[in-house]
Image 1 (cartoon, rainbow, N blue to C red):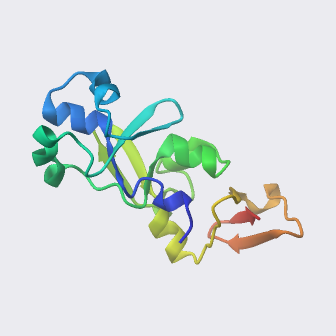
Image 2 (cartoon, one colour):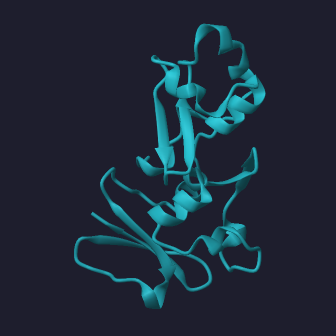
Length: 155
């Protein structure tokens, strides 16, 4: 499986961690042995199993985000407007599975890729869109989706 759908497999959403612990927003910055990841300069995630010992008890009740991405980050990485994940009237909306964590909407990219047989390498560029708008080149793989949409993976 590609790198993109596995981005958050080993991370917790910081907003959920801080909410459940009742700690201030920038607390993670002072936890020296807790690596963090920032996506789109908006979403902060902290690495699983690295919370300070006095806070480890919270991990079993945190939401597993394996295979999921925030919709804004997913739309940026797939080079598509974020509306595709936001409105039920969009043709591909129902093709994806969604999850809300602390008012952040996540899309299950891993499940979507697996169900459609899409293979993506770590440094590939992915474009999701209407077939007429996709640019097919010699070093790309094309995947036909429903409703005149497709995905092109540029190697």
